[in-house]
Image (cartoon, rainbow, N blue to C red):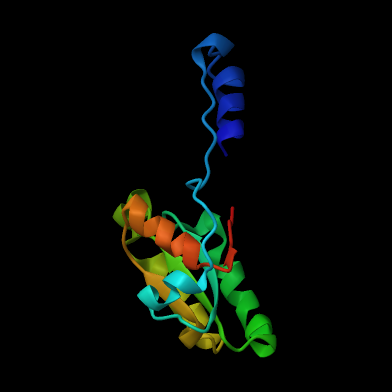
Amino acid sequence: MAERAVGYLKDIYKVPDEKIDFIHHGIPDVPFVDPNFHKDSFGVEGRIVLLTFGLLSPNKGIEYAIRALPSIVKRFPNVVYIVLGATHPHLLRAQGETYRLSLQTTAKEAGVGGNVIFHNRFVSLEELVKYISAADLYLTLT
């Protein structure tokens, strides 16, 4: 998305290159820690943890991950998908928690409600690092 924004600045708004600084988006660079070390902090010890974090909005595709979960759970019943983040403020103002509630409904209807954990909040960088460290697989959805 950030690279696309650079293109928009140049093509649409005619901003010269020298006025644009590209800052890579990513996760904190921390040493590897066995994911099991932090899992008990989140009540997911002994489980395979999938993680998505960030502001929730329909363009992230979280619903696709939830719809894929029944097939995954069939093969790996101890999987849990943690969806960490508050609803995007613009979406919250326009629609309230409709999107988050639809995700919860999708999980329940798919029979994986017990395999999805929603944490509706922002977390500090320190806590985010613990969530990332507890994850076996990080899902970046766009």
